[in-house]
Length: 397
Image (cartoon, rainbow, N blue to C red):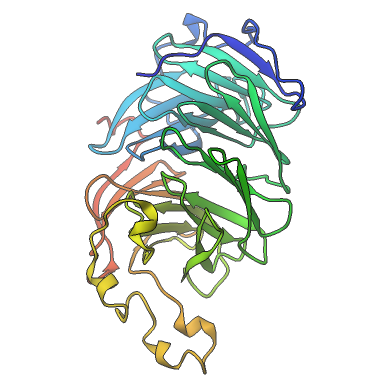
């Protein structure tokens, strides 16, 4: 379990004026009060406002209009919930691995806190132990064991976790989705966020104090993902047809894969733990799994070579028309997904790789939980292994 940081409050300020620590002010509607955590109404199905996986995708958090819930992915079960009742809306919630510290932001029609505050919650104490206040709405939060990253529409703030000291500010292009990712290996931190130009990604290597700008797409960045070590970056644009994989160290393009021919809104991208696979979800209702052919030496760990890697002509990975790619448009020689799973079109899903081999976990904003398995050799349609609706009171795990 992580050691809880001291009870502190910090406010947004300029880089040369780091926020001074001080006592935590008590908001008028405060879950730190014991009578706010009451016996939940188990018969009521809450409205889901936000879902997010933890850093290793072994758990996920759900923010609702009444509080938040934490679930284990394998085996699937609810770990705990905190119901703050009416006026307890949580619009963003982020876990810190499996420890007792979470970060959340009020949201929904009746938020528990203003949307310009990030609250640090210690579930051992069932109360907030710190807060970060800003002049505008918080669009995203990312946690590391040593850092808190807060995303606003045009700015990103990096804080030291232990004392909430402001360490870095980054200007970005308009970022209404709160796009930002951080690496999670201790000792080195890599942060990726939108740059100042359309289609540009900024990469901050804090260990070497280097900044890299990558022109990833011609159109606006819609989604990206980072490997645990921060060495590989996957990006998708607002067109949603192509996903590109970059080396964050030198900005080189390593691979390009095609989700489809039609425009789509990409909801999430996820690397497998070995970076052998990449999963993509979009508003088209299909989750795709792609085989990545990145040099394993780049990642600093062993990878088992799959059949599709040893046979690059695998028809499920590369179009069989690639031998005349000099004549036909680039579309015909694109690398396509190895495996697919079809869901409801238009509903928002996020995706991650399961801890069991060749499995994908899919979470939907309707409360759906899917565990699917894919064939790494033959590909094709994934098989559904498990399904639950984690919001329904009858489905107690």
